[in-house]
Length: 349
Image (cartoon, rainbow, N blue to C red; front, top):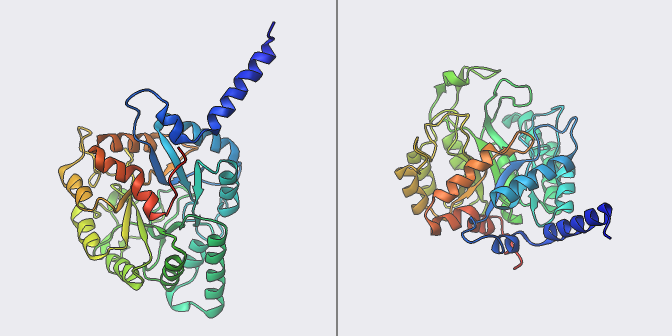
């Protein structure tokens, strides 16, 4: 007679075997009409390291990924300022990837390169600081990171202590130097930058928190960064969700036309401004967005910006977005573009 503990053991073994199978294989063996799998290139295991360890959140992330058909997630630290109390990055994320190598990859620099960039005024870059910056960038590459990030040139504060305002030139000398390293290493740069196409006041809806009253134009600086080294791939994060309302389809189209090394990751968040969202009120993809995606079909990826300790709403919206795309376009945006941009090998069958 099989005891309760014996039955529990058998079930546990089967569960572990199922987890060990490549995700693509499990999708193929699921019911007919299974959703197209996604590679999410921008997500966070948690907001601040502080009181949390990585493993519980990794389990939570895996559960969400399996439920929503995500085959792999790129984990990266937020763009931390210098001295942030909740800072985490490469060591913590490396540990998660080692534990689940087929399901996660990591991007680093938000915890190390970003504080250096924002602590160093563009006109006060010394040789010693350059040496420190370059050494850290090379260490990230040697550690097996998929890219550099999350870095920021313009980051608004939400009024919460763990989400501060940060601003610097997109063509800061450190960004230019990193572009050279990224080009040589074949590693994309993940860049968070609110679109400011002209000098303008801070939008009223973003007045809360320690934000400035005026914003300086930054699109020309972004283009100087892109033009500095065309072999550097820049992934401009959060297309479809921006706080100025200025990251329009028209602006993105013009930048994509002029800059062949510019890529964009798509974020959908019902809690933010919706003016530039790719989804209309009826949940369908807006015609201008669909035309943009078709015209630049190789330049967009999914980057949910999901914090796995805060639910799955953003990732759920990414799933709905992919499912609303025409099949050929969905395949590119959901996963194939990510494989090309981040030079991933195809999953085992």
